Amino acid sequence: MKKLLPIAAIALLLLPTIGFGQSTTVKPGTYRAVLKTRGGDLPFGLDIKPAANDPKTYTVFALNGNERLPMDPATIEGDSLRIPMALFDSELVAKIEGNMLRGVFRRRRVALPSQTLPFEAQHGVTYRFTPAEESTRAVTTNLTGKWATDFGSKTGKVDTVNAVGVFDQKGSRLSGTFLTPTGDYRYLSGAVVGDSLFLSCFDGSHVYLFKAKHDPATKTLKGGLWAGIAGYEAWAARFDPKADLPDPAKLTYLKPGSKTLNASFPEPNGNIVSLSDARFKNKVTIVQIMGSWCPNCMDETNFMSPWYKKNKSRGIELVGLSFERSPEMAVSGPKIERMKQRFKIDYPVVLAGTNDKAQASKALPDLNAVVAFPTTIFIDKKGQVRHIHTGFSGPGTGKYYEQYIEEFNRLVDKLVAE
Image (tube, rainbow, N blue to C red; front, side, top):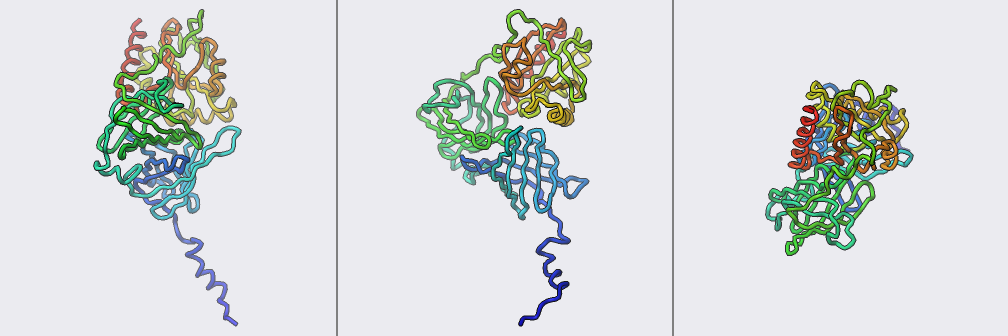
């Protein structure tokens, strides 16, 4: 019969196994992260650093092209790292395994079960799609320029133009975005390997993976877009330096007989804000149709918030009409407040309804329709609507963003001078 060890001795042997006295930490630095989608690995970058005041809290940035997008503070929970993105009701949760993180991307939707994708990240890896993109020897084509694009193409050809791809290729590295009548696909980053395009984006809300084959003889691209947890659509594009979109000022407009915008909605604190309030009288007023769940709206707000601080003394007011996933203030009010804190917004943001476009259109009956989040409405000192801009070309669009800012300031200057 074997001699049994004393209970105290057994406890000492088990200490390393169960982790007493050990502290779980994340190796700081840059990670190559991937989500496992139906279209294959969707890569993006993560920059993870410990917070200065708490060894179990980390600052995290998602890296897509030139963007460093801050996530919410990440925390160690047991043997795992949790990276929340509260504005988008999503999170990354992964077990810490030395140089690796392995877990899931989880996204919640109102009245629906959580959706997940497998997630992993490796410390210190610099390529995005494949090691081959590190070498220009893999490059056989250059895709820099404008591409007339048909998302949802049934034939593999550009039968309709519902987007414009704008790409910048340096060596094998590719960056850019797609402009659409209702906004852009934000920062896309990837590579050209052989005759193929690879682009991706992850920002906590957008989950995009683009792949396409290039035919140099016809100057066309043919491929697929995997979006979100399980979405897919084919797309095709042709090189066209003159490719353009419909006028964003003609998509949403006042109904015949209307000259102003009637809107009255509550802030999270219960205060009712109406465009007929004294604060807006004899002032140029800008109305943002937006939502805290909308990354394009966040891009616009990132511009609007500091712009308003700089210009409000000129007789300018700004108000955000936030259309959220839930009409309940108890649910959506905290999201609006988090958005205000994150972007340091000091103009009123009200809960105007749900983000269903048909419902949003009913909430603003003076408009023909709300077709995009964001939509920006410019009202003159007499309270009359002078211009409505559908969508927003964010900083990921490069010169198109700069052009929009120039046009924005030129219009406001004109209205202020009247």
